[in-house]
Amino acid sequence: MKYHQINSALFVKNRRKFMAEMKPNSVAVFNSNDIYPVSADSTLPFAQHRDIFYLSGVDQEESVLLLFPDAPYEHQREILFLRETNEHIAVWEGEKLTKERAFQVSGIRTVYWLQDFHKVLNEMMTYADTMYINTNEHYRATVETETREARFVKWWKERYPAHNVAKSNPILQRLRSVKESEEIDLIQHACDITEKGFRRLLSFVKPNVTEYEIEAELAHEFIRNRSKGFAYTPIIASGNNANVLHYIENNQQCKEGDLILLDVAAEYANYSSDMTRTIPVSGRFSDRQKAVYNAVLRVKNEATKMLTPGTLWKQYHVEVGKIMTSELLGLGLIDKADVQNENPEWPAYKKYFMHGTSHHLGLDTHDYGLLHEPMKANMVFTVEPGIYIPAEKFGIRLEDNVVVQEKGEPFNLMRNIPIEVDEIETLMNE
Figure 1 (cartoon, rainbow, N blue to C red):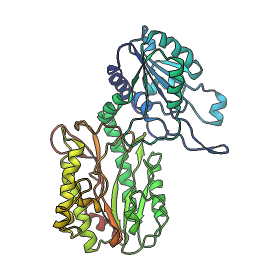
Figure 2 (cartoon, rainbow, N blue to C red):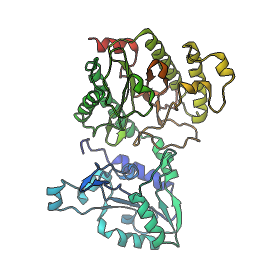
Figure 3 (tube, rainbow, N blue to C red):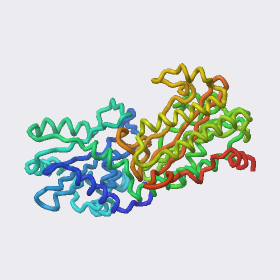
Figure 4 (cartoon, one colour):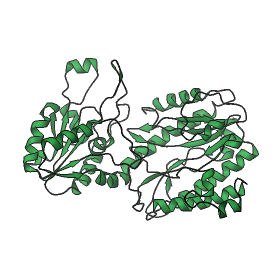
């Protein structure tokens, strides 16, 4: 892995929190992701399942974590199963975790090779009454591929039909949404790498540069700072492309007078950052572009102040909608009649700002978090309002990542990334 080793104390702490929520006499199992084939002998780069990483720090395929806090013997309460490594694997694939190294990474003393998993699990199930299965219940999830986790759940239900079933996901949704200080530091590090990439662009962008050249500059800067690269598929949308919310082709030339909407960010140690900035190709905003830009910035700043403990996600978005409505009226994009006659299910402002303002951020870019529950301190959110005007061939979105504080305004992890019009113009014209 490119990133510096994370102190295993974080994962010890995470396991303790999870096990404290488990029912008496229960077992929980977490699987690594598969390595997915492309065709022939090609595969996609491995990406670890965030839940087993959160609980163990293990960032390797074919790994399994078993938790059994009420096991009769102490050495059975936390168990890691790893693919057995040897000299042949080391030569052909590179270093894999040894049992000693796995302990250093995870803090788990009991480590078996994967071929022992079924035998050990069978013994654990003779002691246990309940199995926690790990299903994906994220509100945005649409999973068509059968995952390694799903295959295990299907096999387990057939093998142990007499046991009770519980779900690990509701526990993880709550635990993962509230970050430990170590996690906030990792997200901050990802934001700092993103800052380096963005500052690099400000002196690089000029008329006739291509979107993919910009993507290449970012990838270079991210990877040279120990990131695997982009935390998500980058959006580099010049001109009217910015009005396609998930534009990812990144294959057009950036023309003089246009804006470029950049929804791009680095990951670090599997933790995501998530930044959006909008910059002028020519280094200067037009008066109209500046007016819309500053309207979006005002919405972002006011929305950020509302991310406090006790805030409900749904009501927060209603309030942000009111602020955006006021700005759109000031820009002449809607009028009072539009507001008076609006459909409550799709308010007038939605014509120009059709997506949400915030989502949880962490190990996943759209991280775990139960949206019906009030916000808590140490949750991390994006704040990303936008105004999209196809008729004027530009769209503007601005996005920062903030930590909810126990008292006071949220702490902006992207506070050092240029966002004010004057600063951007100055840096682009130095």
